[in-house]
Image (tube, rainbow, N blue to C red; front, side, top):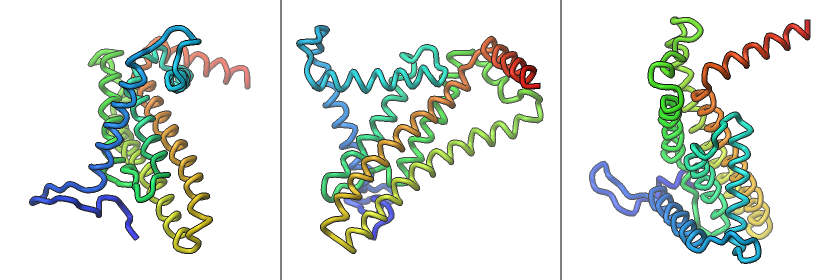
Length: 240
């Protein structure tokens, strides 16, 4: 019973190796690129002339766009490329689990750590782009200077939490499916495939939402912070 697709190695030279995780990651990236090109090469503005795949893609984009806006990012177009890619990569890697012998790269800790690191890097990048370098750095010493180490630890801990959460859910679903298949090889695989698809899409949604929340917190300007504080004070006053 394999815990991770990293254990299947196709080629190795010194400390460099080509394992199943890397292969599946590149397969999914190629599928996403080719699929996006095929769907968008002949885009139509008329509803009657649109292809089914264009309608599906537009629905996905609009749903992601609306979710980003609801979280508090006023200009979703700035972030939908990054957040949407995270969601589609994780979701597709889970949906492909219906293919026999396929193992999702998100069941590998190396993949989930890489995704979490990309979020860790994107947060200050978007924050600096929106607020400016010094104003963003100032958030690490708010409300007092002694909060600097705690804020840094918070950034690191939530990155670790992102990686471990996704890895744990994807790995555990694979292990449970393997155990049930060994017990009842005919009925349980269909049930576990359905549950695996649902779990994978939910995990993709949660990962994308958390990434959006972190970016929203980093890009929130001072006027929004003041209005939020005033709104909270007003609520507290009304409650009292």
